[in-house]
Length: 82
Image (cartoon, rainbow, N blue to C red; front, side, top):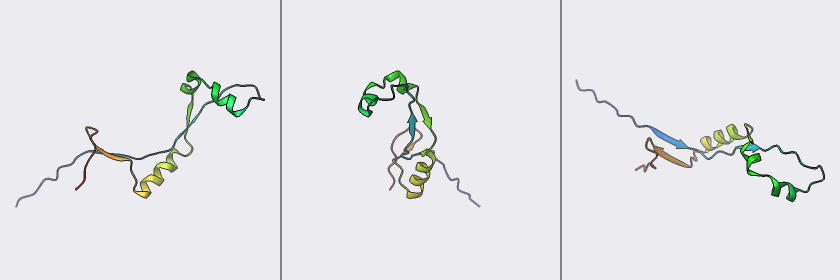
């Protein structure tokens, strides 16, 4: 009796996910939205904290919809399915 061995391959399925970064800044209370957005600097952005709200739900939704952004192999090359 001959048994065949099934080969496996690693696939990286990349889903588009929306995540939010909270950037906390101290500014005068009478600042306008435009002024606020124009004076946030790089250091403040870098210190932003990822907000977990939305990320998991966004991933589940993309998975349910069967809508990955791209499928890659273990060498991060895009996979072409026949």
